[in-house]
Length: 105
Image (cartoon, rainbow, N blue to C red; front, side, top):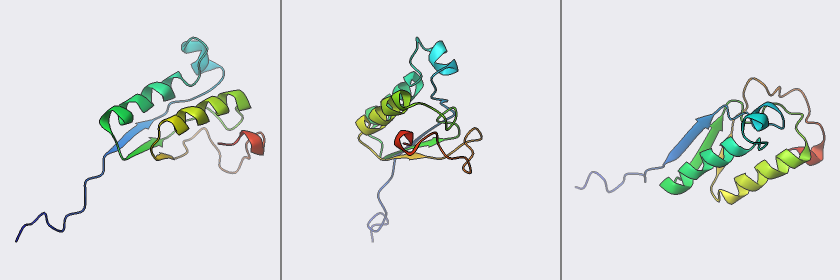
């Protein structure tokens, strides 16, 4: 009997953490683009043809970011064209609401 006959398919998960997407500090370090790290990180799973991306920790600097930076991040995540799971880090307090419902990702 073939031992691989009932084996589940492999899943390729690409993980990164603590990207700190923001409008200020990270943006200042990256020629004004606070999403540069997110953009760079999303290149790898596409190149590897990953099944899913896990972003853990502080993906966003805080929950008070403006709509421009959130729209830019939302666009990058949509362009990734694969499932992205985001787990909150220490800078995001789940008990604090975002600045407005329209800016939440």
